[in-house]
Structures are given as C-alpha cells and as structure tokens.
Length: 403
Image (cartoon, rainbow, N blue to C red; front, top):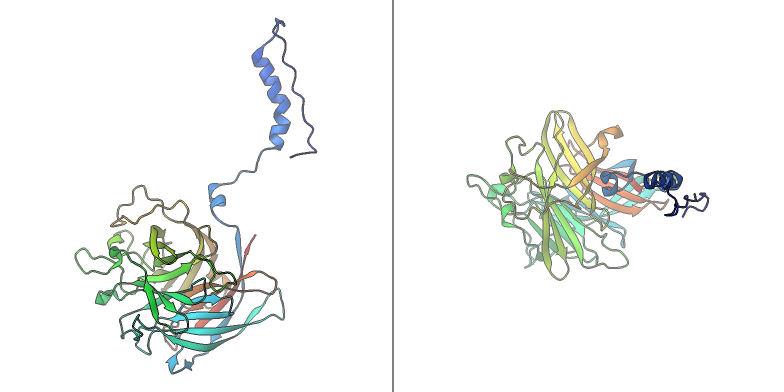
C-alpha cells in the first residue's frame, strides 16, 4: 500500500453519441494518467542468482593450533572432520587414521572462547576430553587398513553420529556411511550406497578413486538441540570424480565432476537423489585438488562447501555457498562423460582464504559452532595434519551472518 501517492483520476470515456470519439487517443491518455502510479509500484529487479543464494557474510576472528599430543595412548591428529553438539557444548572430531597408528576413532573436544571483546571473540583453548574407538555391529574394532574415516555428523537426537569412509580403492573396498553409538562407538546401521561407487579395476575402471571417496558429510539439522527433529536429510559427496566420470579434458585432480548423494532418514534410510557438484579449476601448480567438506546451513537446500588444493605454492582453500534446488537427479547416469541436459549444483564464492594473510594448512573439516557473545553464528574449520611433524592441527574461527 502506498498511502502518500496521489491517485490519478483517468479521464472519463466519451459517450457513444460523441461523434469525435477516438479509441486509440483515449487509451493513450489513460496510460499517461496512470503512469505515475505504475512507476511508483514497480518492484526492484532481482536476478535469478540473487533469488537462489542467501546473502551471507563471513568474518575471520582468529586461529588456534592444537598442540601435538597423545590421548589414551593414541596420537591426536589426522582430524578430517568436526561436528558440534550444541546441547553438550562439545565438538566431535574424526581421525582419518586407517588403523596404522591406533584403531579408527573420533575425539571429544572442549572449546573455550576469549570473549574479552564481545565483538571479536577469539579461540582461547581446545582440550581433548575423550577418544572413542569405532567398532562394527559385533563390537569388534575395524581391521587395520579396512576403513578410511573422513566425515562425521551428529544425529539430531544427539545419541549417535554418522561417519563416512572413503573406502580403500586400492584394495577394492567400497566407501560407506554408517551410524555409530556416540558413547560406545559401536556400529548400528549402514546406508545403501549405489553400486557405481564401488571401486572396480576393470577396463574401463569404475567407482571412487584411491583416497578420493566420501570425504564430505553433513545433515540438514544441527544435532543435540533441545528439540529433537526427525526425520532428517543426510548428504555426502566424493572428494573427486568417480573413475567412470573422468573426462580427458577434466582429469581426476582437475576441474572434476563430483557426485553428491541425498538421503532421507527416519527409522529407514532412503536414497532420494544424486547431483553433480562441479569443482572449480585448480590453481596453477596444484598437485591435489578436491572437495573436502560440505555443510548444510538450513533446511532449504543451502550449503557451504570447502575446496582445498595443494601444490608448489602450498595449500589454497576456498569457501563456496551452493544450492541444490533445480539440480538434475543424476542417479541413473552411469557416467558423467556425456552430460547433455544436466543442470549441475549451482554455487558462488563466499571467501578465498588466501585473503586472510595467514599460513593455511590442510583444511578439511567444517561445522557450525557455538553461538558467539553477540548472538551471531560461529563457523569452525579444522586442518588434517596427516600425522606429520611439519604440519599442524589448525582451527579457524569465523562469524557467519546473513546480511
């Protein structure tokens, strides 16, 4: 409603008896009279891209390096993914140890903030409080080299976590997504994974590449809230293209065409769809380039993604916002080499972390963290130190806001 706009009165149409009546001239006069009102009511032009993406900002607040240490006889390292438990105010971090140094496991971490300046809180300290060994449905730890855990997400009831494994392609071991008890680490159920993800060394080869399987995992709710929300959605994505999707013009570590799976979960686990996630081209000199994490930020199909590269210039990391709405279901595509008529996931750059002017390590994990003192939402990133003395376990803290 526009109460301050004068309402123009259109001219009365001449009567039929008026022999001088000109219909075209009368319509032109009417249009001119109504033009101020029509112009005042015109809505601002909004592009399709602006309607698709959220208007987000990301402010860097600081970093923290976790000291090298052992906990309960295990080396704390290889932290490939994190998930935040809002109810208990704790972080669970998966180690990607394949059992070479200790049984496959996840850690419980306590994070403390320095809120001396409420507008710019800092990471004060991160403490290791627990280590939970992953076991199969019979309660036995996984055999050495049989799993490669890379993703972790807390279920909404706060009693279990979902964990993804990249598989071990060199041994023909398929990737998986399984639910584990939060306290005991015992496996409870597994999601059904399409056969085209299983590594097979035929000619042509099929499935996930070695160390390039389900690196990314997220749920579309934040687990451990005061109100449990079920059913929910789970999403997992490959770090790089499947072997059958590799195009000669888009090699495995190039601008690859990754796949993201979408599941509906309650008492059942149902595969809903699959979509093509297009990687950005790697920076010059990159030897490794992959999608290391995705993070659902609402229940409307909006996500963040973390793309990481390593090469002669060290590590390079970019954060993107992406939306799954409108993307083609590719579940029945045996290969991505022919993609006529396929609408991929659409994305836009949120932040290039090279702009932070700090040394970036091997960032692989990402989660929405605790609420900051000003009431805004925190975002936490963590690096995988590869159990290398020359690398660090680096935590980065951001403020994530909608403008």
